[in-house]
Image (cartoon, rainbow, N blue to C red; front, side, top):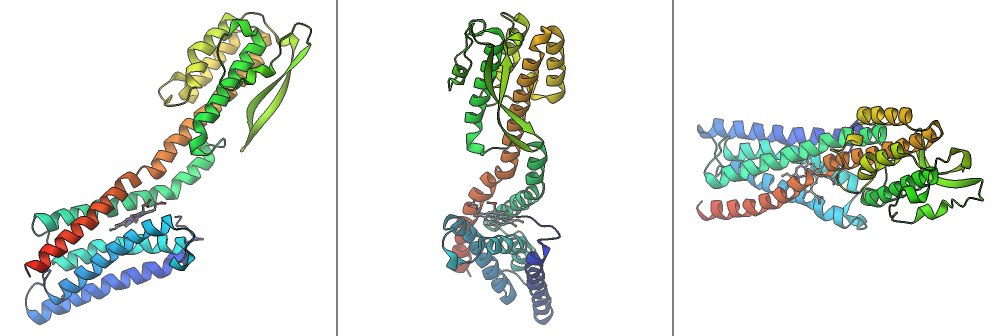
Length: 326
Ligand code: HEM
Protein backbone atom coordinates (compact mmCIF):
# COMPACT_ATOMS: atom_id res chain seq x y z
CA UNK A 1 0.00 0.00 0.00
CA UNK A 2 1.66 3.18 -1.23
CA UNK A 3 1.37 6.49 0.56
CA UNK A 4 2.46 9.37 -1.63
CA UNK A 5 1.13 12.60 -3.07
CA UNK A 6 -1.11 10.75 -5.56
CA UNK A 7 -2.59 8.30 -3.05
CA UNK A 8 -2.86 10.77 -0.14
CA UNK A 9 -6.46 11.81 -1.04
CA UNK A 10 -7.54 8.16 -0.50
CA UNK A 11 -5.92 8.14 2.96
CA UNK A 12 -6.89 11.64 4.09
CA UNK A 13 -10.42 10.83 5.29
CA UNK A 14 -9.28 7.78 7.26
CA UNK A 15 -6.44 9.71 8.90
CA UNK A 16 -8.84 12.48 9.92
CA UNK A 17 -11.45 9.99 11.20
CA UNK A 18 -8.82 8.11 13.21
CA UNK A 19 -7.52 11.30 14.81
CA UNK A 20 -11.07 12.43 15.64
CA UNK A 21 -11.84 9.07 17.30
CA UNK A 22 -8.73 9.31 19.52
CA UNK A 23 -9.57 12.91 20.35
CA UNK A 24 -13.14 11.99 21.34
CA UNK A 25 -11.87 9.26 23.69
CA UNK A 26 -9.31 11.63 25.21
CA UNK A 27 -11.99 14.23 25.85
CA UNK A 28 -14.31 11.59 27.37
CA UNK A 29 -11.45 10.40 29.57
CA UNK A 30 -10.80 13.94 30.87
CA UNK A 31 -14.54 14.57 31.44
CA UNK A 32 -14.95 11.33 33.39
CA UNK A 33 -11.83 12.06 35.49
CA UNK A 34 -13.16 15.54 36.20
CA UNK A 35 -16.69 14.46 37.09
CA UNK A 36 -15.75 11.44 39.21
CA UNK A 37 -12.77 13.11 40.89
CA UNK A 38 -10.82 9.92 40.28
CA UNK A 39 -8.53 8.44 37.64
CA UNK A 40 -10.68 6.36 35.23
CA UNK A 41 -9.63 2.69 35.05
CA UNK A 42 -10.65 -0.19 32.79
CA UNK A 43 -13.99 -0.66 34.58
CA UNK A 44 -15.01 3.01 34.43
CA UNK A 45 -17.58 4.06 31.83
CA UNK A 46 -15.03 5.53 29.45
CA UNK A 47 -12.67 2.62 30.20
CA UNK A 48 -15.29 0.03 29.27
CA UNK A 49 -16.36 1.83 26.10
CA UNK A 50 -12.73 2.35 25.02
CA UNK A 51 -11.95 -1.33 25.80
CA UNK A 52 -14.87 -2.61 23.74
CA UNK A 53 -14.00 -0.24 20.91
CA UNK A 54 -10.33 -1.30 20.92
CA UNK A 55 -11.37 -5.00 20.98
CA UNK A 56 -13.79 -4.38 18.10
CA UNK A 57 -11.03 -2.67 16.14
CA UNK A 58 -8.69 -5.64 16.70
CA UNK A 59 -11.37 -7.98 15.31
CA UNK A 60 -11.91 -5.58 12.40
CA UNK A 61 -8.15 -5.63 11.76
CA UNK A 62 -8.34 -9.42 11.42
CA UNK A 63 -10.97 -8.87 8.72
CA UNK A 64 -8.20 -8.04 6.26
CA UNK A 65 -7.15 -11.69 6.46
CA UNK A 66 -10.64 -12.77 5.31
CA UNK A 67 -10.76 -10.00 2.65
CA UNK A 68 -7.42 -11.10 1.22
CA UNK A 69 -8.59 -14.69 0.89
CA UNK A 70 -11.96 -13.99 -0.71
CA UNK A 71 -10.83 -11.51 -3.32
CA UNK A 72 -13.81 -12.18 -5.55
CA UNK A 73 -16.39 -11.33 -2.87
CA UNK A 74 -17.01 -7.75 -3.97
CA UNK A 75 -19.78 -7.19 -1.42
CA UNK A 76 -17.05 -7.03 1.24
CA UNK A 77 -15.81 -3.78 -0.29
CA UNK A 78 -12.68 -2.92 -2.23
CA UNK A 79 -9.50 -4.53 -0.95
CA UNK A 80 -7.69 -1.20 -1.24
CA UNK A 81 -10.18 0.53 1.07
CA UNK A 82 -9.87 -2.33 3.54
CA UNK A 83 -6.12 -1.93 3.54
CA UNK A 84 -6.23 1.84 4.10
CA UNK A 85 -8.72 1.42 6.96
CA UNK A 86 -6.55 -1.41 8.35
CA UNK A 87 -3.51 0.86 8.54
CA UNK A 88 -5.03 3.98 10.07
CA UNK A 89 -7.52 2.33 12.42
CA UNK A 90 -4.78 -0.15 13.44
CA UNK A 91 -2.59 2.74 14.51
CA UNK A 92 -5.15 4.13 16.97
CA UNK A 93 -5.70 0.84 18.80
CA UNK A 94 -2.69 1.51 21.06
CA UNK A 95 -3.82 4.96 22.32
CA UNK A 96 -7.41 3.74 22.74
CA UNK A 97 -6.18 0.68 24.66
CA UNK A 98 -4.19 2.93 26.98
CA UNK A 99 -7.26 5.12 27.52
CA UNK A 100 -9.12 1.89 28.36
CA UNK A 101 -6.51 0.84 30.92
CA UNK A 102 -6.17 4.33 32.44
CA UNK A 103 -2.62 4.56 31.04
CA UNK A 104 -1.50 1.58 33.13
CA UNK A 105 -0.07 -1.78 32.15
CA UNK A 106 -2.15 -3.76 34.68
CA UNK A 107 -1.53 -7.39 35.68
CA UNK A 108 0.45 -10.03 33.75
CA UNK A 109 -2.41 -10.86 31.35
CA UNK A 110 -3.22 -7.27 30.38
CA UNK A 111 0.49 -6.40 30.20
CA UNK A 112 1.07 -9.35 27.84
CA UNK A 113 -1.90 -8.23 25.78
CA UNK A 114 -0.52 -4.70 25.53
CA UNK A 115 3.00 -5.91 24.63
CA UNK A 116 1.56 -8.20 21.96
CA UNK A 117 -0.52 -5.31 20.60
CA UNK A 118 2.59 -3.10 20.41
CA UNK A 119 4.47 -5.88 18.58
CA UNK A 120 1.63 -6.41 16.08
CA UNK A 121 1.26 -2.69 15.39
CA UNK A 122 5.07 -2.28 15.30
CA UNK A 123 5.46 -5.07 12.74
CA UNK A 124 2.59 -3.56 10.73
CA UNK A 125 4.33 -0.16 10.72
CA UNK A 126 7.57 -1.88 9.63
CA UNK A 127 5.75 -3.62 6.76
CA UNK A 128 4.01 -0.42 5.71
CA UNK A 129 7.33 1.48 5.65
CA UNK A 130 9.03 -1.31 3.70
CA UNK A 131 6.22 -1.21 1.13
CA UNK A 132 7.04 2.44 0.47
CA UNK A 133 10.53 1.89 -0.88
CA UNK A 134 11.14 -1.79 -1.75
CA UNK A 135 9.03 -1.88 -4.98
CA UNK A 136 10.91 1.17 -6.25
CA UNK A 137 14.23 -0.38 -5.26
CA UNK A 138 13.23 -3.59 -7.06
CA UNK A 139 12.42 -1.59 -10.20
CA UNK A 140 15.81 0.17 -10.08
CA UNK A 141 18.07 -2.70 -9.07
CA UNK A 142 16.38 -5.68 -10.71
CA UNK A 143 15.49 -5.00 -14.36
CA UNK A 144 15.66 -8.80 -14.88
CA UNK A 145 12.91 -9.28 -12.23
CA UNK A 146 10.97 -12.49 -12.70
CA UNK A 147 8.17 -14.32 -10.89
CA UNK A 148 9.69 -15.09 -7.49
CA UNK A 149 8.73 -18.77 -7.52
CA UNK A 150 10.42 -19.16 -10.93
CA UNK A 151 13.85 -17.88 -9.86
CA UNK A 152 15.40 -21.34 -9.48
CA UNK A 153 14.14 -22.42 -12.90
CA UNK A 154 15.46 -19.26 -14.56
CA UNK A 155 18.83 -19.84 -12.89
CA UNK A 156 18.94 -23.36 -14.37
CA UNK A 157 18.34 -21.81 -17.80
CA UNK A 158 21.16 -19.32 -17.18
CA UNK A 159 23.47 -22.19 -16.29
CA UNK A 160 22.51 -24.08 -19.44
CA UNK A 161 23.19 -20.98 -21.49
CA UNK A 162 26.56 -20.59 -19.82
CA UNK A 163 27.50 -24.22 -20.40
CA UNK A 164 26.42 -23.83 -24.02
CA UNK A 165 28.55 -20.70 -24.42
CA UNK A 166 31.69 -22.38 -23.09
CA UNK A 167 31.11 -25.56 -25.06
CA UNK A 168 30.51 -23.55 -28.21
CA UNK A 169 33.74 -21.65 -27.63
CA UNK A 170 36.01 -24.50 -26.53
CA UNK A 171 34.31 -27.74 -27.61
CA UNK A 172 31.92 -30.01 -25.76
CA UNK A 173 34.69 -32.39 -24.70
CA UNK A 174 36.53 -29.66 -22.76
CA UNK A 175 33.56 -29.00 -20.48
CA UNK A 176 31.86 -32.20 -19.55
CA UNK A 177 28.89 -30.85 -17.60
CA UNK A 178 25.27 -31.92 -17.72
CA UNK A 179 22.92 -29.13 -18.69
CA UNK A 180 19.46 -29.29 -17.19
CA UNK A 181 17.36 -28.46 -20.18
CA UNK A 182 19.75 -29.72 -22.88
CA UNK A 183 19.85 -26.28 -24.45
CA UNK A 184 23.40 -27.00 -25.45
CA UNK A 185 21.99 -29.35 -28.08
CA UNK A 186 21.58 -26.14 -30.07
CA UNK A 187 25.33 -25.92 -30.27
CA UNK A 188 26.16 -28.33 -32.99
CA UNK A 189 29.91 -28.16 -33.30
CA UNK A 190 30.39 -30.34 -36.35
CA UNK A 191 33.65 -29.59 -38.11
CA UNK A 192 31.87 -28.88 -41.37
CA UNK A 193 29.87 -26.02 -39.86
CA UNK A 194 31.23 -22.49 -40.29
CA UNK A 195 28.95 -20.92 -37.67
CA UNK A 196 26.64 -21.91 -34.86
CA UNK A 197 23.76 -20.23 -33.08
CA UNK A 198 23.65 -19.51 -29.38
CA UNK A 199 20.67 -18.38 -27.36
CA UNK A 200 21.52 -16.20 -24.37
CA UNK A 201 19.50 -14.02 -22.08
CA UNK A 202 20.38 -10.36 -22.41
CA UNK A 203 19.06 -7.09 -21.14
CA UNK A 204 18.87 -3.75 -22.83
CA UNK A 205 18.14 -1.07 -20.27
CA UNK A 206 15.15 -2.38 -18.37
CA UNK A 207 14.06 -4.85 -21.02
CA UNK A 208 15.36 -8.37 -21.01
CA UNK A 209 14.77 -11.43 -23.10
CA UNK A 210 16.38 -14.24 -25.05
CA UNK A 211 18.55 -13.21 -27.97
CA UNK A 212 20.29 -15.38 -30.51
CA UNK A 213 23.96 -14.84 -31.28
CA UNK A 214 25.62 -16.28 -34.34
CA UNK A 215 29.13 -17.34 -33.45
CA UNK A 216 31.60 -17.94 -36.24
CA UNK A 217 34.10 -20.77 -36.07
CA UNK A 218 36.92 -18.22 -35.99
CA UNK A 219 36.05 -17.59 -32.34
CA UNK A 220 36.56 -21.29 -31.53
CA UNK A 221 39.57 -22.20 -29.35
CA UNK A 222 39.86 -25.97 -28.98
CA UNK A 223 40.97 -25.88 -25.37
CA UNK A 224 41.22 -22.92 -22.99
CA UNK A 225 42.19 -23.92 -19.45
CA UNK A 226 41.75 -20.27 -18.33
CA UNK A 227 38.14 -20.15 -19.44
CA UNK A 228 37.27 -23.68 -18.27
CA UNK A 229 38.89 -23.17 -14.84
CA UNK A 230 37.17 -19.83 -14.41
CA UNK A 231 33.87 -21.41 -15.35
CA UNK A 232 34.19 -24.33 -12.94
CA UNK A 233 35.64 -22.25 -10.07
CA UNK A 234 33.39 -19.19 -10.25
CA UNK A 235 30.59 -19.25 -12.82
CA UNK A 236 29.17 -22.73 -12.32
CA UNK A 237 28.81 -22.45 -8.52
CA UNK A 238 27.20 -19.01 -8.94
CA UNK A 239 24.70 -20.19 -11.56
CA UNK A 240 23.13 -22.71 -9.20
CA UNK A 241 19.71 -22.39 -7.59
CA UNK A 242 19.60 -21.60 -3.89
CA UNK A 243 21.74 -19.37 -1.75
CA UNK A 244 24.79 -17.99 -3.59
CA UNK A 245 24.99 -14.56 -1.94
CA UNK A 246 28.31 -15.36 -0.24
CA UNK A 247 30.13 -16.39 -3.45
CA UNK A 248 32.73 -14.10 -5.07
CA UNK A 249 30.57 -13.32 -8.12
CA UNK A 250 27.73 -12.11 -5.89
CA UNK A 251 29.66 -8.92 -5.29
CA UNK A 252 29.55 -6.81 -8.46
CA UNK A 253 32.89 -5.01 -7.90
CA UNK A 254 34.66 -8.30 -7.18
CA UNK A 255 32.95 -9.93 -10.17
CA UNK A 256 34.07 -7.08 -12.46
CA UNK A 257 37.67 -7.55 -11.33
CA UNK A 258 37.54 -11.31 -11.84
CA UNK A 259 36.04 -11.01 -15.32
CA UNK A 260 38.54 -8.27 -16.21
CA UNK A 261 41.35 -10.66 -15.26
CA UNK A 262 39.71 -13.42 -17.27
CA UNK A 263 39.48 -11.23 -20.36
CA UNK A 264 43.17 -10.37 -20.00
CA UNK A 265 44.20 -14.02 -19.57
CA UNK A 266 42.13 -15.77 -22.26
CA UNK A 267 42.83 -15.97 -25.95
CA UNK A 268 41.46 -12.69 -27.45
CA UNK A 269 39.04 -14.78 -29.56
CA UNK A 270 37.30 -15.84 -26.32
CA UNK A 271 36.75 -12.34 -24.96
CA UNK A 272 33.18 -12.08 -26.34
CA UNK A 273 32.38 -15.40 -24.62
CA UNK A 274 33.78 -14.03 -21.35
CA UNK A 275 31.61 -10.94 -21.78
CA UNK A 276 28.48 -13.03 -22.35
CA UNK A 277 29.26 -15.14 -19.28
CA UNK A 278 29.59 -11.94 -17.30
CA UNK A 279 26.15 -10.80 -18.53
CA UNK A 280 24.61 -14.05 -17.34
CA UNK A 281 26.29 -13.66 -13.95
CA UNK A 282 25.06 -10.05 -13.72
CA UNK A 283 21.53 -11.30 -14.25
CA UNK A 284 22.01 -14.03 -11.65
CA UNK A 285 23.17 -11.30 -9.23
CA UNK A 286 19.96 -9.41 -9.91
CA UNK A 287 17.96 -12.49 -8.99
CA UNK A 288 19.91 -12.75 -5.72
CA UNK A 289 18.91 -9.15 -5.03
CA UNK A 290 15.31 -9.89 -6.02
CA UNK A 291 15.17 -12.72 -3.47
CA UNK A 292 16.59 -10.44 -0.76
CA UNK A 293 14.11 -7.65 -1.52
CA UNK A 294 11.27 -10.17 -1.71
CA UNK A 295 12.12 -11.29 1.82
CA UNK A 296 12.21 -7.74 3.07
CA UNK A 297 8.85 -7.04 1.45
CA UNK A 298 7.03 -10.14 2.71
CA UNK A 299 9.10 -11.62 5.58
CA UNK A 300 7.63 -9.31 8.23
CA UNK A 301 4.20 -10.92 7.69
CA UNK A 302 5.67 -14.03 9.34
CA UNK A 303 5.71 -11.96 12.54
CA UNK A 304 2.61 -9.82 11.94
CA UNK A 305 0.16 -12.63 11.15
CA UNK A 306 0.94 -15.20 13.91
CA UNK A 307 1.19 -12.46 16.54
CA UNK A 308 -2.19 -11.11 15.38
CA UNK A 309 -3.75 -14.53 15.92
CA UNK A 310 -2.12 -14.75 19.37
CA UNK A 311 -3.40 -11.23 20.11
CA UNK A 312 -7.00 -12.21 19.35
CA UNK A 313 -6.70 -15.32 21.55
CA UNK A 314 -5.31 -13.22 24.42
CA UNK A 315 -7.98 -10.56 23.84
CA UNK A 316 -10.74 -13.13 24.43
CA UNK A 317 -8.93 -14.44 27.53
CA UNK A 318 -8.60 -10.89 28.86
CA UNK A 319 -12.26 -10.06 28.19
CA UNK A 320 -13.38 -13.32 29.84
CA UNK A 321 -11.26 -12.76 32.98
CA UNK A 322 -12.17 -9.05 33.22
CA UNK A 323 -15.93 -9.61 32.88
CA UNK A 324 -15.86 -12.52 35.33
CA UNK A 325 -14.21 -10.54 38.11
CA UNK A 326 -15.90 -7.21 37.46
C1 HEM B 1 -4.11 -4.93 16.20
C2 HEM B 1 -3.66 -4.47 15.10
C3 HEM B 1 -3.47 -5.29 13.87
C4 HEM B 1 -3.85 -6.57 13.57
C5 HEM B 1 -4.62 -7.53 14.44
C6 HEM B 1 -3.39 -6.86 12.23
C7 HEM B 1 -3.59 -8.04 11.55
C8 HEM B 1 -3.28 -8.25 10.24
C9 HEM B 1 -3.61 -9.42 9.49
C10 HEM B 1 -4.36 -10.62 10.04
C11 HEM B 1 -3.17 -9.24 8.22
C12 HEM B 1 -3.34 -10.20 7.06
C13 HEM B 1 -2.09 -10.99 6.86
C14 HEM B 1 -2.22 -11.92 5.69
O1 HEM B 1 -3.23 -12.58 5.59
O2 HEM B 1 -1.33 -12.00 4.88
C15 HEM B 1 -2.53 -7.96 8.16
C16 HEM B 1 -1.95 -7.42 7.04
C17 HEM B 1 -1.33 -6.21 7.01
N1 HEM B 1 -1.16 -5.35 8.06
FE1 HEM B 1 -1.93 -5.53 9.89
N2 HEM B 1 -2.75 -5.76 11.74
C18 HEM B 1 -2.77 -4.78 12.71
C19 HEM B 1 -2.23 -3.52 12.63
C20 HEM B 1 -1.55 -3.02 11.57
C21 HEM B 1 -0.96 -1.70 11.49
C22 HEM B 1 -1.02 -0.66 12.59
C23 HEM B 1 -0.36 -1.60 10.27
C24 HEM B 1 0.39 -0.48 9.64
C25 HEM B 1 0.58 0.70 10.13
C26 HEM B 1 -0.57 -2.86 9.58
C27 HEM B 1 -0.12 -3.15 8.32
C28 HEM B 1 -0.48 -4.25 7.60
C29 HEM B 1 -0.19 -4.42 6.20
C30 HEM B 1 0.55 -3.42 5.32
C31 HEM B 1 -0.74 -5.65 5.84
C32 HEM B 1 -0.83 -6.25 4.45
C33 HEM B 1 0.36 -6.94 3.98
C34 HEM B 1 0.16 -7.33 2.52
O3 HEM B 1 0.47 -6.52 1.68
O4 HEM B 1 -0.35 -8.40 2.30
N3 HEM B 1 -1.29 -3.70 10.39
N4 HEM B 1 -2.62 -7.37 9.41
